[in-house]
Image (cartoon, rainbow, N blue to C red):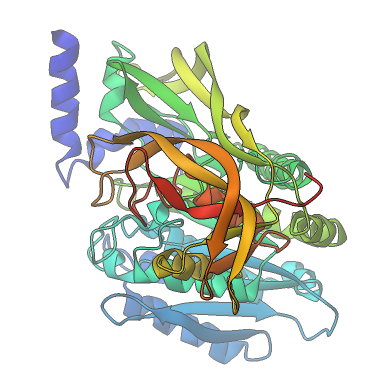
Length: 513
């Protein structure tokens, strides 16, 4: 009973907008998150507690570009739902050699203003620090410092239509996700780093310890464990890029860990460590053949507390990723190019490794000391396949399902159309089980199905959509078209089905399989 009272009390104070002391008390900030000695001249540091506005950001960007017209330029990738233009700043040297393209994102969630400030500071350093000028000889860097401008204007996590932009990289139900994906498809960056912030104190922590504990880390890494991302690209991401970034943080005594969040399973708290779902940027862009990492930095609901340290942490990471990209440019180009040509079988579903003795260090807000807590955890980076299917030569989609084709094209998948009717031997899916989830997710109830695959002759009229799987975004297509896939088009209700029904998506297999 005492635990439940404590949980409800913690939940109550977390709902209070001004309860910064609850997230990071002054004694915790002083001992564990002291600000470094450094000069930062971005807009938030020139005023009070209210974070940088869109207009202030644009003024700052325009001033930088005016002073550096030969290396910096401004464009806009599209507009938000409220019609505000989303800026992208390109920074590159004048050398004409082929450059590795790096994309930095900030403020995908509107209530994470430190990410915008960090991107502005990164621009400043890239343009004004002579020690970093060499990076522009081999790198072209594009920074989008505020993606979710509408949410950011009210410090709200979601977009104007109340959807979470980082849960929308498969369904593309927000205009911002569509324009971001379109820019990604056209720009084709080999490296993508998405900067976020996390909330240090969660009510669930009261259910795993009798102590009052809070997150102890400056930064958490979310990088792909999706088994459809080629192994060499996963290794390059984890071992080279993340590995070097960990060393850079260690050198500045900044604490870090793989990203984790909590969930309840049969009434018990479970920590999900890492992630494999393509609904978020790290996995979505990894499936698009990029080195892609989502960085979670301490910051949500702590206002301006430890802001210098947070910006320092973000820039340390940005600098490390850029130096790694520079030092390994040829390898990155080779690995990402080969990833686009990979034709492996499709891992439709997988299961994380589950352990009951995972140890995480927290900060006790009672004693102001570090404490280790043993928890139950699901380790996504150690997932094993549970359903694997042979890669088809192509998917065929009923002409009556133009929405499927449109969504695929928005994701960057090449979709062709039959000009003449054909009868083909194909694999069909029949729905054996159908379950609608009880919990609302992003304004819809997800669906889970199990199917049986059979082979038969099917007549396809002219106008049938065809998705060839020898294309660079073949893994993207598979991740949404396989019916059992998490975050796939059935799961996300792009089209509807029911038990016993044959799906309007078919698999044309290679003749030698």
